[in-house]
Amino acid sequence: MSTSAGQADSQAESLELPERALLLHIGLMKTGTTSLQNAAAALRPELLANGVRYPGKTFNHRSAVNDFMGHSWGWGTTPVHGAWRKLRAEIDRDTENRIWIGHEFGANADDATAARWREELGERAHVVVTLRSYGALLPSLWQQMTKEGETAGFEPWLRGVLSDEPESELSSFRDRIDQGRVVSRWAEAFGAQNVTVVVVDKSTPALLFDAFESMLGLEPGLLSTAKLNGRSSNRGMSLEEAELFRALNKRMRPQLTWLEYCKWLRDTESVSVLNRRKPGKHDTKLVLPPWAAEVAHTRAERYVEQVRESGVRVVGDLALLGAEVPSSDEARLSSAVVPIDAAVEAILGVVRQGRRDEERLAKAREEVSRLEEEAAARRKADAKAAKVAKPGKSGQSGTTVADASGRELVRALGSRVKRRVRRG
Image (cartoon, rainbow, N blue to C red):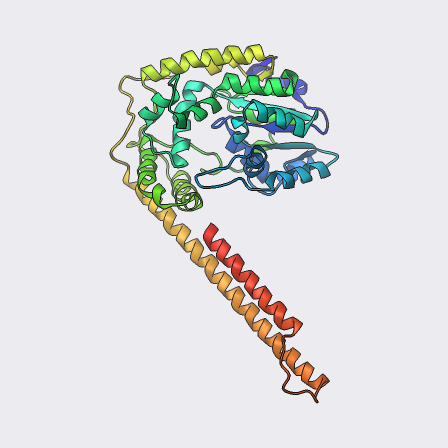
């Protein structure tokens, strides 16, 4: 079934999933996933009141999804052991509501992992895949990868991803954005009747939220009440902004662990720029060169046929996936300069992060001092009470329960402070 934007209202009831269904949204990247996750996290109480549980307490379910698949996120890291088990326990405790989980990293699954997801989630699960024009997706993906440490320029990256035989480091990424194969894989694992594709397009901006509200039986317009900012809406960067972060990646990435990179660059400088700056007249919008647009169009047409042949339910206009995208012989693919205000905002982001660290550290030190004073007062009181109770046994020494618990409390808090400082 294909539902166009004009048919969305009349088809809304047919999209609704059964009671107690589990909706697993696997992405793909840059198809509105961040906006959906932000809305769901911000509206957890409202969703539950409407019969939908968005489990956990975090912004999304990245750690749980990666843990189940045995994947890590970022260089030098390992999966968060136990994250999926914890999320699964919350899902199992809920015997009344529909469940909404997922993360775009779910699309990274191979055939065997998709089959494991089916075995794990059972018959109640319904998979949702969000897609958008392949050609339009490529500039957004390069920007996203740049925010996550990529150092390749736009043109070399395009040539690698669009190659039929890319280098090993890009081959897995190319497979993750193979829209036709991703949809076919999950249709084979779950059954075509249990997979819905939502086609995202700028011409129908409300379709994404409308589709999820319809599938989950939510009140129309509920998801749009969540407030979005530059990070949660994940706005695109200009070429110059992306080049700024790419230059920083080249210099800083070899010196930083993944967690340090996230703290100081990914979640600080880039967020500061996206939140507080609007691209101006000195910024360039990324446009594909003609050769890339042609390859992307040919590949997208194949994807459209694969999705259609898979037999899954499609919401939106499937033909939009293969629509030709703007291209230019004069497209700028690199920049040697960046706007001054972008560089300033990036520096200010680091300064703000440093101030936040200092404030947290100061509060933690105050708390440690307070607990030490309380522990000292408790020890003094216990010692006095013990002397009164046993006046004939002076000179004995030992550690009271209050003394030990006080020290343990201070020690535990000190460890927590160190962890906070490391995490930022």
